[in-house]
Amino acid sequence: MPIHPMIVHFPIALLTTFVLLEILWFIFRKDWIKNSSVLTLFIGLISVIPTLLSGEASAEAIENIQQVAELVKSHETFAKLTGLTFLIVFIIKVVLMRTGKLNFKTNLIPFILSLVGIYFLIQTGLRGGELVYKHGAGILF
Image (cartoon, rainbow, N blue to C red; front, side, top):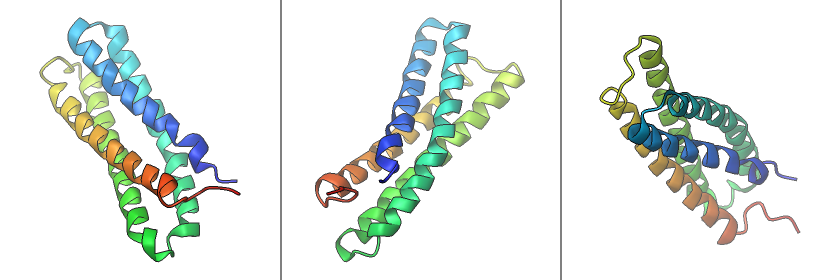
C-alpha cells in the first residue's frame, strides 16, 4: 500500500498554515503568532522529508510509463523546489530571530519567498492530482 497519498497532505496543510500565520503576524504583530509560524514551518519541513521519500518510492512504479514520465518528473521537481524554498525561508527566519533583527521590514523577504514556495506547492499538487485523477497513478484495485 503506497504511503505517499496518506502523508502528502501534512506538508500541504502545515506550509499553507505557516503562510497564513505570517499574514496574521503582519496584521497583529504578536510574538506568539510569530513563534507559532516558525514552529509550524519547522514541523512542515520535517513532514516534507517522508513525503519526498515516499513520493520517490511511488514514482518508481510508474515513471517508466511513457505517458506519465514527464509529468512525474515535473511533479518531483516542483516538490523539491517547494521543500528547498521553505528551507531557505526557515533559515532566514531563524537567523533573523537569533540576531534580534526580525521585524516587519526584514520579514518581507522570507514572506515573499514563502509565497514563491506556495506557488511551487500548488504546482506540485496540480501535477500530483493529474497523476492520480487523470492517469490513475497509485490507485489500488
